[in-house]
Image (tube, rainbow, N blue to C red):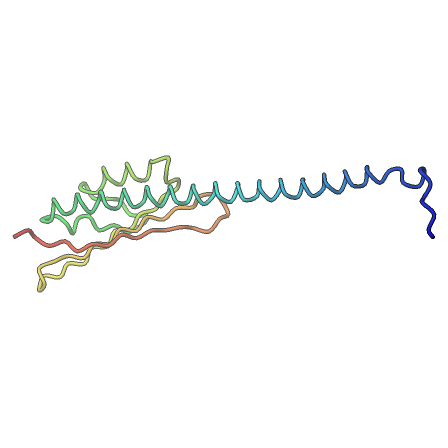
Length: 145
């Protein structure tokens, strides 16, 4: 038959249990905070992508209404925007929602098919040192009948 341990030998066991529980709780809280930070980053990326889509769709709508001058909307990063493109470009690049945005507009007229393919690419970097993001919206413009 075993003899029970004296009371003095069992002292401090509750403290060890509390310390282990506190460490496990801290690990759980740190994990939850990490998930929160990552979800905030994903939400910011989604917001910037939505802003890029809205801006690109707005430009395509403007071009659809001005098909006679659609070639003037072509734009390469680093160049000066045409008079038709300048207002939209200034609004898009100066937006606080798409920091450091760069824009590229490709216009590919296809006279034989009586249509024009337009691609608007907006690129941005959410924070310095991070990978660049970009979104392209393409559309076909044809004269209304």
